[in-house]
Image 1 (tube, rainbow, N blue to C red):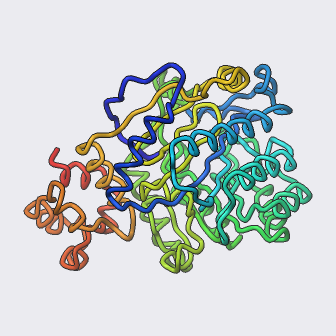
Image 2 (spheres, one colour):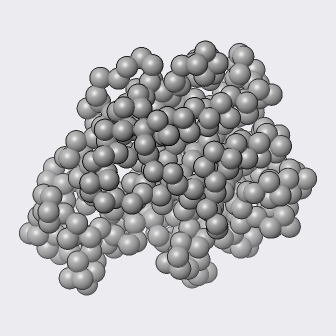
Length: 423
Protein backbone atom coordinates (compact mmCIF):
# COMPACT_ATOMS: atom_id res chain seq x y z
CA UNK A 1 0.00 0.00 0.00
CA UNK A 2 1.55 3.36 -0.93
CA UNK A 3 2.28 5.67 1.93
CA UNK A 4 4.91 7.32 4.07
CA UNK A 5 5.44 7.45 7.84
CA UNK A 6 3.07 10.07 9.23
CA UNK A 7 2.35 11.16 12.78
CA UNK A 8 -1.05 9.69 13.51
CA UNK A 9 -3.95 11.43 15.18
CA UNK A 10 -5.01 9.93 18.51
CA UNK A 11 -7.18 7.00 17.40
CA UNK A 12 -10.27 5.91 19.35
CA UNK A 13 -10.42 2.22 20.22
CA UNK A 14 -13.72 1.86 18.38
CA UNK A 15 -12.10 2.70 15.06
CA UNK A 16 -13.03 5.31 12.51
CA UNK A 17 -15.73 7.72 13.61
CA UNK A 18 -18.13 9.02 10.95
CA UNK A 19 -17.78 12.62 12.15
CA UNK A 20 -14.03 12.48 11.47
CA UNK A 21 -14.68 11.59 7.85
CA UNK A 22 -17.46 14.17 7.61
CA UNK A 23 -15.13 16.95 8.75
CA UNK A 24 -12.49 15.96 6.23
CA UNK A 25 -14.89 15.52 3.33
CA UNK A 26 -15.86 19.19 3.68
CA UNK A 27 -12.24 20.12 3.05
CA UNK A 28 -12.14 17.85 0.00
CA UNK A 29 -15.35 19.42 -1.33
CA UNK A 30 -13.93 22.91 -0.94
CA UNK A 31 -10.81 21.91 -2.87
CA UNK A 32 -12.96 20.60 -5.70
CA UNK A 33 -11.19 17.25 -5.58
CA UNK A 34 -13.00 14.62 -7.64
CA UNK A 35 -11.99 11.17 -6.44
CA UNK A 36 -12.77 7.77 -7.81
CA UNK A 37 -13.81 5.04 -5.36
CA UNK A 38 -12.31 1.55 -5.23
CA UNK A 39 -12.63 -1.53 -3.04
CA UNK A 40 -9.85 -3.78 -1.81
CA UNK A 41 -10.75 -7.15 -0.26
CA UNK A 42 -8.00 -8.90 1.70
CA UNK A 43 -8.25 -12.69 1.90
CA UNK A 44 -5.63 -13.78 4.46
CA UNK A 45 -5.38 -17.52 3.72
CA UNK A 46 -2.45 -19.37 2.11
CA UNK A 47 -1.58 -23.04 1.83
CA UNK A 48 2.08 -22.27 2.59
CA UNK A 49 3.67 -19.09 3.86
CA UNK A 50 6.50 -18.30 1.45
CA UNK A 51 9.78 -17.54 3.18
CA UNK A 52 10.09 -14.01 1.73
CA UNK A 53 6.49 -12.95 2.41
CA UNK A 54 5.66 -10.35 5.08
CA UNK A 55 1.99 -9.93 4.14
CA UNK A 56 -0.75 -10.51 6.68
CA UNK A 57 -1.39 -14.16 5.77
CA UNK A 58 -2.11 -17.40 7.65
CA UNK A 59 -1.90 -21.07 6.71
CA UNK A 60 -4.54 -22.31 9.18
CA UNK A 61 -7.93 -22.95 7.57
CA UNK A 62 -9.82 -21.99 10.75
CA UNK A 63 -8.74 -19.05 12.91
CA UNK A 64 -11.94 -18.78 14.94
CA UNK A 65 -15.57 -17.70 14.47
CA UNK A 66 -15.92 -15.68 11.29
CA UNK A 67 -12.25 -16.23 10.46
CA UNK A 68 -12.27 -19.60 8.75
CA UNK A 69 -12.23 -20.26 5.05
CA UNK A 70 -15.85 -21.40 5.24
CA UNK A 71 -17.11 -18.33 7.15
CA UNK A 72 -14.83 -15.58 5.89
CA UNK A 73 -17.09 -14.44 3.04
CA UNK A 74 -19.88 -13.61 5.50
CA UNK A 75 -17.47 -11.58 7.63
CA UNK A 76 -16.23 -9.62 4.61
CA UNK A 77 -19.81 -8.96 3.55
CA UNK A 78 -20.55 -7.65 7.06
CA UNK A 79 -17.73 -5.14 6.70
CA UNK A 80 -19.05 -4.00 3.33
CA UNK A 81 -22.40 -3.27 4.96
CA UNK A 82 -20.60 -1.44 7.78
CA UNK A 83 -18.59 0.58 5.25
CA UNK A 84 -21.74 1.66 3.44
CA UNK A 85 -23.30 2.80 6.73
CA UNK A 86 -20.20 4.83 7.68
CA UNK A 87 -20.04 6.50 4.28
CA UNK A 88 -23.74 7.33 4.32
CA UNK A 89 -23.48 8.79 7.82
CA UNK A 90 -20.44 10.81 6.78
CA UNK A 91 -22.18 12.42 3.80
CA UNK A 92 -19.54 11.07 1.43
CA UNK A 93 -20.76 11.43 -2.16
CA UNK A 94 -22.23 8.23 -3.57
CA UNK A 95 -20.00 6.77 -6.28
CA UNK A 96 -19.96 3.51 -8.13
CA UNK A 97 -16.90 1.34 -7.75
CA UNK A 98 -14.15 2.23 -10.21
CA UNK A 99 -12.08 -0.89 -9.44
CA UNK A 100 -12.29 -3.91 -7.15
CA UNK A 101 -9.25 -5.96 -6.16
CA UNK A 102 -9.15 -9.20 -4.18
CA UNK A 103 -5.67 -9.70 -2.74
CA UNK A 104 -4.02 -11.80 -0.10
CA UNK A 105 -2.96 -14.29 0.76
CA UNK A 106 -4.50 -16.36 -1.93
CA UNK A 107 -8.08 -15.23 -2.58
CA UNK A 108 -8.76 -18.22 -4.82
CA UNK A 109 -8.40 -20.59 -1.86
CA UNK A 110 -11.97 -19.48 -1.15
CA UNK A 111 -14.64 -21.07 -3.35
CA UNK A 112 -15.36 -18.99 -6.45
CA UNK A 113 -18.97 -18.74 -5.26
CA UNK A 114 -17.78 -16.98 -2.07
CA UNK A 115 -15.69 -14.46 -4.00
CA UNK A 116 -18.68 -13.73 -6.22
CA UNK A 117 -20.93 -13.32 -3.14
CA UNK A 118 -18.55 -10.70 -1.74
CA UNK A 119 -18.49 -8.91 -5.09
CA UNK A 120 -22.29 -9.05 -5.29
CA UNK A 121 -22.54 -7.45 -1.83
CA UNK A 122 -20.32 -4.59 -2.97
CA UNK A 123 -22.37 -4.21 -6.15
CA UNK A 124 -25.57 -4.04 -4.09
CA UNK A 125 -24.17 -1.33 -1.81
CA UNK A 126 -22.45 0.95 -4.30
CA UNK A 127 -22.93 -0.32 -7.83
CA UNK A 128 -20.07 -0.97 -10.23
CA UNK A 129 -19.16 1.49 -12.96
CA UNK A 130 -19.37 0.37 -16.56
CA UNK A 131 -16.04 -1.06 -17.68
CA UNK A 132 -14.77 -1.36 -14.11
CA UNK A 133 -11.68 -3.49 -13.55
CA UNK A 134 -12.44 -6.35 -11.13
CA UNK A 135 -9.37 -8.42 -10.30
CA UNK A 136 -8.44 -11.34 -8.12
CA UNK A 137 -4.95 -12.51 -7.36
CA UNK A 138 -4.37 -16.24 -7.72
CA UNK A 139 -1.63 -18.81 -7.55
CA UNK A 140 -1.41 -20.88 -10.73
CA UNK A 141 -2.20 -24.03 -8.73
CA UNK A 142 -5.14 -22.51 -6.84
CA UNK A 143 -7.58 -22.33 -9.78
CA UNK A 144 -9.46 -24.72 -12.02
CA UNK A 145 -11.11 -24.22 -15.37
CA UNK A 146 -14.47 -24.30 -13.60
CA UNK A 147 -13.53 -21.81 -10.86
CA UNK A 148 -12.29 -19.27 -13.40
CA UNK A 149 -15.49 -19.59 -15.44
CA UNK A 150 -17.52 -18.98 -12.25
CA UNK A 151 -15.48 -15.87 -11.47
CA UNK A 152 -15.97 -14.51 -14.99
CA UNK A 153 -19.69 -15.25 -14.92
CA UNK A 154 -19.89 -13.49 -11.53
CA UNK A 155 -18.41 -10.26 -12.86
CA UNK A 156 -14.64 -10.60 -12.48
CA UNK A 157 -12.73 -9.20 -15.45
CA UNK A 158 -9.11 -9.94 -14.63
CA UNK A 159 -6.85 -12.41 -12.82
CA UNK A 160 -3.34 -11.68 -11.60
CA UNK A 161 -1.26 -14.85 -11.37
CA UNK A 162 1.73 -15.07 -9.05
CA UNK A 163 4.08 -16.68 -11.55
CA UNK A 164 7.26 -15.23 -9.96
CA UNK A 165 9.69 -17.41 -11.97
CA UNK A 166 9.81 -20.04 -14.71
CA UNK A 167 12.85 -21.74 -13.16
CA UNK A 168 12.36 -24.55 -10.66
CA UNK A 169 15.33 -23.80 -8.40
CA UNK A 170 14.24 -20.15 -8.08
CA UNK A 171 10.70 -21.21 -7.15
CA UNK A 172 12.19 -23.60 -4.59
CA UNK A 173 14.24 -20.79 -3.00
CA UNK A 174 11.11 -18.62 -2.86
CA UNK A 175 9.16 -21.61 -1.45
CA UNK A 176 6.43 -21.28 -4.06
CA UNK A 177 4.00 -24.19 -4.29
CA UNK A 178 3.45 -24.27 -8.07
CA UNK A 179 5.65 -25.60 -10.85
CA UNK A 180 6.37 -23.69 -14.09
CA UNK A 181 4.09 -25.97 -16.10
CA UNK A 182 1.09 -24.85 -13.99
CA UNK A 183 1.27 -21.33 -15.38
CA UNK A 184 0.40 -21.81 -19.08
CA UNK A 185 -2.45 -24.13 -18.11
CA UNK A 186 -3.93 -21.56 -15.71
CA UNK A 187 -3.47 -18.73 -18.23
CA UNK A 188 -5.21 -20.76 -20.95
CA UNK A 189 -8.16 -21.45 -18.65
CA UNK A 190 -8.41 -17.73 -17.79
CA UNK A 191 -8.37 -16.79 -21.48
CA UNK A 192 -11.09 -19.33 -22.24
CA UNK A 193 -13.21 -17.73 -19.53
CA UNK A 194 -12.72 -14.30 -21.09
CA UNK A 195 -10.55 -12.90 -18.29
CA UNK A 196 -7.65 -10.49 -18.78
CA UNK A 197 -4.38 -11.85 -17.45
CA UNK A 198 -1.59 -10.21 -15.49
CA UNK A 199 1.58 -12.02 -14.43
CA UNK A 200 3.59 -11.11 -11.33
CA UNK A 201 7.33 -11.79 -11.54
CA UNK A 202 10.14 -11.53 -8.97
CA UNK A 203 13.76 -10.92 -9.91
CA UNK A 204 16.96 -10.92 -7.88
CA UNK A 205 16.40 -14.11 -5.88
CA UNK A 206 19.79 -15.33 -4.59
CA UNK A 207 21.04 -18.03 -6.94
CA UNK A 208 19.07 -16.71 -9.92
CA UNK A 209 21.37 -16.05 -12.86
CA UNK A 210 20.77 -13.44 -15.54
CA UNK A 211 20.02 -16.36 -17.87
CA UNK A 212 17.42 -17.67 -15.41
CA UNK A 213 15.74 -14.27 -15.39
CA UNK A 214 15.79 -14.10 -19.20
CA UNK A 215 14.14 -17.54 -19.24
CA UNK A 216 11.40 -16.25 -16.94
CA UNK A 217 10.80 -13.17 -19.10
CA UNK A 218 10.72 -15.19 -22.32
CA UNK A 219 8.37 -17.76 -20.82
CA UNK A 220 6.02 -15.08 -19.52
CA UNK A 221 5.96 -13.31 -22.88
CA UNK A 222 5.14 -16.53 -24.71
CA UNK A 223 1.85 -16.48 -22.76
CA UNK A 224 1.02 -13.00 -24.14
CA UNK A 225 -0.33 -11.52 -20.90
CA UNK A 226 -2.12 -8.20 -20.97
CA UNK A 227 0.05 -6.90 -18.16
CA UNK A 228 3.30 -7.75 -16.37
CA UNK A 229 4.50 -6.68 -12.93
CA UNK A 230 8.14 -7.28 -12.03
CA UNK A 231 9.46 -6.66 -8.53
CA UNK A 232 12.93 -6.95 -7.09
CA UNK A 233 13.01 -9.36 -4.14
CA UNK A 234 13.12 -7.50 -0.82
CA UNK A 235 14.38 -9.27 2.30
CA UNK A 236 11.95 -8.15 5.00
CA UNK A 237 12.51 -8.21 8.74
CA UNK A 238 10.47 -10.86 10.51
CA UNK A 239 10.37 -13.26 7.57
CA UNK A 240 11.88 -16.72 7.35
CA UNK A 241 14.05 -15.51 4.49
CA UNK A 242 15.26 -12.53 6.52
CA UNK A 243 16.17 -14.76 9.48
CA UNK A 244 18.16 -17.06 7.20
CA UNK A 245 20.10 -14.10 5.78
CA UNK A 246 20.93 -12.89 9.31
CA UNK A 247 22.15 -16.37 10.27
CA UNK A 248 24.27 -16.54 7.14
CA UNK A 249 22.55 -19.67 5.84
CA UNK A 250 20.99 -17.77 2.93
CA UNK A 251 22.70 -15.26 0.64
CA UNK A 252 21.32 -11.73 0.62
CA UNK A 253 20.06 -9.95 -2.46
CA UNK A 254 22.51 -7.92 -4.58
CA UNK A 255 21.41 -4.39 -5.63
CA UNK A 256 23.70 -4.41 -8.69
CA UNK A 257 22.31 -7.78 -9.77
CA UNK A 258 18.76 -6.48 -9.37
CA UNK A 259 19.59 -3.35 -11.38
CA UNK A 260 20.96 -5.48 -14.23
CA UNK A 261 17.81 -7.60 -14.20
CA UNK A 262 15.54 -4.55 -14.18
CA UNK A 263 17.36 -3.15 -17.21
CA UNK A 264 17.04 -6.50 -19.00
CA UNK A 265 13.33 -6.65 -18.20
CA UNK A 266 12.68 -3.17 -19.56
CA UNK A 267 14.59 -3.93 -22.76
CA UNK A 268 12.94 -7.31 -23.40
CA UNK A 269 9.45 -6.08 -22.56
CA UNK A 270 9.80 -2.97 -24.73
CA UNK A 271 10.92 -5.13 -27.66
CA UNK A 272 7.66 -7.07 -27.32
CA UNK A 273 5.44 -3.98 -27.17
CA UNK A 274 5.08 -3.62 -23.41
CA UNK A 275 5.61 -0.10 -22.09
CA UNK A 276 6.26 0.93 -18.51
CA UNK A 277 3.62 3.09 -16.86
CA UNK A 278 4.89 2.64 -13.29
CA UNK A 279 8.37 1.67 -12.17
CA UNK A 280 7.45 -2.00 -11.67
CA UNK A 281 4.61 -2.37 -14.18
CA UNK A 282 4.36 -2.77 -17.96
CA UNK A 283 1.35 -3.00 -20.28
CA UNK A 284 0.32 -2.81 -23.91
CA UNK A 285 -0.83 0.71 -24.87
CA UNK A 286 -0.77 1.95 -21.26
CA UNK A 287 -1.75 5.48 -22.28
CA UNK A 288 -4.92 4.38 -24.07
CA UNK A 289 -7.47 5.30 -21.40
CA UNK A 290 -5.85 2.99 -18.89
CA UNK A 291 -6.57 -0.17 -20.90
CA UNK A 292 -4.32 -3.03 -19.80
CA UNK A 293 -3.02 -1.05 -16.84
CA UNK A 294 -3.57 -2.37 -13.35
CA UNK A 295 -6.10 0.39 -12.76
CA UNK A 296 -6.65 -0.51 -9.11
CA UNK A 297 -3.02 0.21 -8.24
CA UNK A 298 -3.14 3.36 -10.35
CA UNK A 299 -5.95 4.56 -8.07
CA UNK A 300 -3.56 4.17 -5.11
CA UNK A 301 -0.75 6.00 -6.86
CA UNK A 302 -3.10 8.85 -7.85
CA UNK A 303 -4.33 9.23 -4.26
CA UNK A 304 -7.94 8.27 -4.94
CA UNK A 305 -10.44 6.89 -2.38
CA UNK A 306 -10.69 3.23 -1.44
CA UNK A 307 -12.12 1.09 1.32
CA UNK A 308 -10.06 -1.89 2.42
CA UNK A 309 -12.03 -4.90 3.66
CA UNK A 310 -10.36 -7.57 5.77
CA UNK A 311 -7.87 -8.04 8.60
CA UNK A 312 -5.08 -5.48 8.45
CA UNK A 313 -6.58 -3.77 5.39
CA UNK A 314 -5.95 -0.03 5.00
CA UNK A 315 -8.46 2.49 3.66
CA UNK A 316 -8.31 6.08 2.42
CA UNK A 317 -11.36 8.34 2.27
CA UNK A 318 -11.23 12.09 1.67
CA UNK A 319 -7.81 12.50 3.19
CA UNK A 320 -8.30 10.21 6.21
CA UNK A 321 -6.40 6.93 6.39
CA UNK A 322 -7.51 4.12 8.69
CA UNK A 323 -6.68 0.47 9.21
CA UNK A 324 -8.30 -2.68 10.55
CA UNK A 325 -7.33 -5.05 13.33
CA UNK A 326 -4.59 -7.28 11.95
CA UNK A 327 -5.44 -10.74 13.24
CA UNK A 328 -8.40 -12.36 11.48
CA UNK A 329 -9.96 -13.54 14.78
CA UNK A 330 -9.82 -10.05 16.33
CA UNK A 331 -11.09 -8.51 13.11
CA UNK A 332 -14.03 -10.92 12.88
CA UNK A 333 -14.91 -10.52 16.55
CA UNK A 334 -15.18 -6.74 16.22
CA UNK A 335 -17.61 -7.07 13.34
CA UNK A 336 -19.53 -9.83 15.09
CA UNK A 337 -20.05 -7.63 18.16
CA UNK A 338 -21.00 -4.52 16.20
CA UNK A 339 -17.70 -2.69 16.70
CA UNK A 340 -15.79 -1.03 13.89
CA UNK A 341 -12.98 -3.27 12.58
CA UNK A 342 -10.75 -0.18 12.33
CA UNK A 343 -8.30 0.28 15.19
CA UNK A 344 -6.49 3.44 14.11
CA UNK A 345 -6.49 6.43 11.80
CA UNK A 346 -4.31 9.29 10.67
CA UNK A 347 -4.78 12.52 8.76
CA UNK A 348 -1.58 13.43 6.90
CA UNK A 349 -0.54 17.06 7.23
CA UNK A 350 0.40 19.25 4.28
CA UNK A 351 4.09 18.37 4.46
CA UNK A 352 3.41 14.63 4.51
CA UNK A 353 0.99 14.90 1.58
CA UNK A 354 3.54 16.89 -0.42
CA UNK A 355 6.15 14.19 0.17
CA UNK A 356 3.69 11.48 -0.80
CA UNK A 357 2.69 13.26 -4.01
CA UNK A 358 6.34 13.51 -5.02
CA UNK A 359 7.09 9.90 -4.08
CA UNK A 360 4.16 8.49 -6.03
CA UNK A 361 4.42 10.87 -8.97
CA UNK A 362 8.03 10.07 -9.81
CA UNK A 363 7.14 6.38 -10.09
CA UNK A 364 4.70 7.01 -12.96
CA UNK A 365 5.40 7.46 -16.66
CA UNK A 366 2.94 10.36 -16.66
CA UNK A 367 5.21 11.96 -14.09
CA UNK A 368 4.70 14.84 -11.74
CA UNK A 369 3.24 18.20 -12.81
CA UNK A 370 5.60 20.93 -11.65
CA UNK A 371 2.79 23.51 -11.66
CA UNK A 372 0.79 21.46 -9.15
CA UNK A 373 3.25 22.58 -6.48
CA UNK A 374 3.32 26.29 -7.32
CA UNK A 375 0.42 27.14 -5.00
CA UNK A 376 1.83 24.94 -2.26
CA UNK A 377 5.57 24.72 -1.68
CA UNK A 378 7.20 25.07 -5.11
CA UNK A 379 9.64 22.43 -6.28
CA UNK A 380 13.27 23.58 -6.26
CA UNK A 381 13.98 24.55 -9.88
CA UNK A 382 17.74 24.40 -9.27
CA UNK A 383 17.39 20.81 -8.04
CA UNK A 384 15.32 19.94 -11.11
CA UNK A 385 18.17 21.26 -13.28
CA UNK A 386 20.67 19.12 -11.35
CA UNK A 387 18.48 16.02 -11.76
CA UNK A 388 18.41 16.62 -15.51
CA UNK A 389 22.19 17.02 -15.57
CA UNK A 390 22.58 13.79 -13.58
CA UNK A 391 20.47 11.95 -16.14
CA UNK A 392 17.75 11.03 -13.65
CA UNK A 393 14.81 12.94 -15.15
CA UNK A 394 13.80 13.71 -18.72
CA UNK A 395 14.95 17.21 -19.67
CA UNK A 396 12.47 17.66 -22.52
CA UNK A 397 9.59 16.59 -20.28
CA UNK A 398 10.75 19.03 -17.59
CA UNK A 399 10.62 21.86 -20.12
CA UNK A 400 7.03 20.82 -20.79
CA UNK A 401 6.32 21.07 -17.06
CA UNK A 402 6.54 17.44 -15.91
CA UNK A 403 9.03 15.46 -13.84
CA UNK A 404 9.41 12.06 -15.54
CA UNK A 405 12.22 9.68 -14.56
CA UNK A 406 14.62 8.36 -17.15
CA UNK A 407 15.47 4.66 -17.21
CA UNK A 408 18.39 5.40 -14.88
CA UNK A 409 16.05 7.50 -12.76
CA UNK A 410 13.67 4.58 -12.36
CA UNK A 411 16.49 2.68 -10.69
CA UNK A 412 16.96 5.61 -8.30
CA UNK A 413 13.43 6.90 -7.81
CA UNK A 414 13.95 7.13 -4.03
CA UNK A 415 16.87 9.49 -4.62
CA UNK A 416 14.73 11.65 -6.92
CA UNK A 417 12.06 11.83 -4.21
CA UNK A 418 14.55 12.81 -1.52
CA UNK A 419 16.12 15.51 -3.65
CA UNK A 420 12.84 17.05 -4.79
CA UNK A 421 11.54 16.96 -1.23
CA UNK A 422 14.65 18.71 0.06
CA UNK A 423 16.05 15.87 2.15
